[in-house]
Length: 121
Image (tube, rainbow, N blue to C red):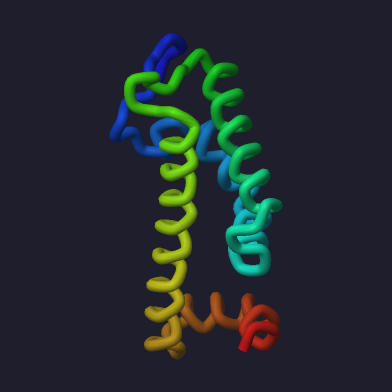
């Protein structure tokens, strides 16, 4: 979207690539806090910082969140949904790979992540 655009209620992160990039850059830390420090003050601070980073990136690109729709809480909710959707899709892909481990692409992907499978199994 061009500078001066208002980010609407039902936007997709993919339409705002720089904002999605901010989230992807912090994905590992988000999951780490979600699994090991869930609902901790550390996670709350991190989530608030993510909202600040997303807002700053939007401003840098000349965008603004629609103030009649978005406060910090709504942006935090959208951030959580982004990560939740990402992990749900990853689980679906993993289930497909495990169901069909002899398929060449699945076998390759599973082999590439064998260290993670062994660490968390």
